[in-house]
Amino acid sequence: MTLNQQIKRWAAELGFQACGIAGIEPPEAEARFLDWLRRGYHGDMDYMARHGTKRSRPAELEPGTLRVISVRMDYLPPDLPDAWAQLADPLRATVSRYALGRDYHKLMRQRLQRLAERIESRVGAFHYRAFSDSAPVLEKPLANQAGLGWQGKHSNLIAQDAGSWFFLGELYVGLELPIDPPADNHCGSCQACIDVCPTQAIVAPYQVDARRCISYLTIELHGPIPEALRAPIGNRIYGCDDCQLVCPWNKFATPTAEVDFHPRNGLDQASLIALFAWDESTFLARTEGSAIRRIGHERWLRNIAVALGNAYRANPLNAHLREALVARCTHPSPLIREHVVWAMNQVGKSADYTPNP
Image 1 (tube, rainbow, N blue to C red):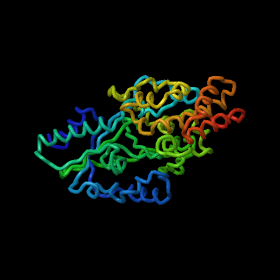
Image 2: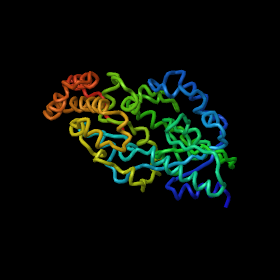
Image 3: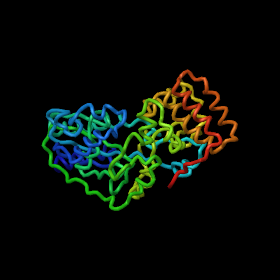
């Protein structure tokens, strides 16, 4: 068995659903990425521009790198509520599927470390470094070069046999391994993801203006959410999956066997009012080990206040909604107070947005 074959077998044994090997030449996506930055589509994510071409050139980030081993780990939890029904219920909270369970970063890096150790057992000591969304790495183009899938018009990676509900990880190695052929694009004329985006963040095929993206607004943005984009957020309080929900390739997605990715604390079917009642200590306890924790309690309440405002617009006679908002009117954070006041002022306004499956 060749070393490449052995690496892929070990990767499968460690719980990765796919593994491929890419070279380190700058991908075609480098020019698109630099243009994306020039257009300001990264918004407040200054870290995206901080490292220059290190993000797209592995040997600049990690000297001595000769190849990139790219891996995929599926995360789709089993037995989830119907996504469109959940989005249509203004009183329920919607959390992006990748964040329902444990944070994936640590798990992925641990598995990659074990993969490196297995390679070391065969070839001896060698130079390597493991990544999983933890450093300036242009991981989706690298995964494309390694044959794991193609970047769809929504910019997420799509695998022909598995859809897009998966995480990516990389092992930069100082080994001259044979390279796998890149994956072909199979989006064709489909533009379902562009049409469904609640905030029209996909401004053109393969171009996402993060400043309009609900995932950016609810996770990356630290300040106030622009008022014009609050109604389209609906009941999405952490991330957005709409572009993946409509992607026809996700009919091939398989629920994950990784228990760590299964929903915790009932976040797959929680009510907005219940989550808005969490104080900071409850938030920290319930989000321990979760990707959600990184936004902090203040932004958590900001996001839910927006969702409650949208719910209040649809349910103006719901006394429980009003009570929940009134309880936060005097919160010490100006950011939270601003969004609570906006939410309370939604009574009597037209319901100008409906989820579009």
